[in-house]
Image 1 (spheres, rainbow, N blue to C red):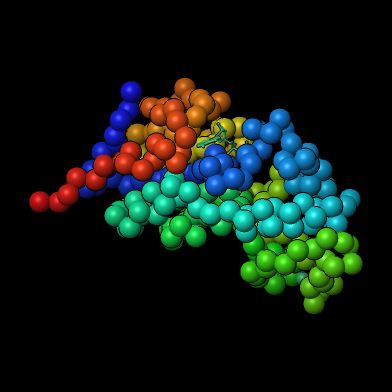
Image 2 (cartoon, rainbow, N blue to C red):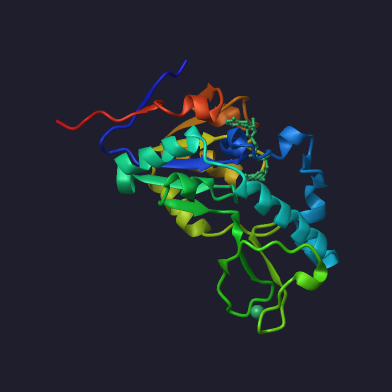
Length: 242
Ligand code: NAD
Ligand code: ZN
């Protein structure tokens, strides 16, 4: 059983978080709800095809998720990771599959949202308009704003079938990390589920943290079973210099 993981002076830590890290904040994971996400099937609302067919339904879904996320607070797992970053500085890198803003609200800065962000939007056309902060709710087709180019404004979310953001940066961080910890990710959504392979190929020690074994559990050096908010505070030990 793993009770503490020591981070040495030369270690670089790569963290990957999934929906499980926000579960104790009250945000439902997808799989824990029998394939439904707040009553919606993912393919109905989180694919480019869904956007083409029914943009209003897509925006109603993301508006609901914006509303839900505003009611939630970061939990002790988010805070533990922010604290770890303060201790490790540039030897720390956090990649999240989550689109909620709970890591940054807990104080994380060296953070990459590979699947986009709930509170950002962009133009559906590739017109050069940068993505922007947006906390508005769009409940009907008429409310969906238009870009100057005529395109509709869409959520800044990576839908199933789209390519996650900043993969070059992610793979370069994976290549140079000496430790990888995955927290609350079921190991089913690629490419994130393959990060552990990549890190092991570069010789990193790998650990999974969550209440059940993920699909790719066999690839990890260690699996720590438990809720992120209970396990993470105090799991990593950083010996004081001197
Ligand atoms: P996932 O693949 O990240 O699976 C959720 C995992 O979290 C499961 O393995 C479950 O055992 C684990 N878990 C549940 N409670 C936990 C806890 N207290 N501590 C630690 N782990 C816990 O995500 P998914 O739900 O299978 O969804 C697939 C995709 O949708 C991913 O990209 C995911 O991040 C995204 N998603 C994002 C959010 C969000 O932004 N908050 C919510 C739902 C889904
Ligand atoms: Zn545009």
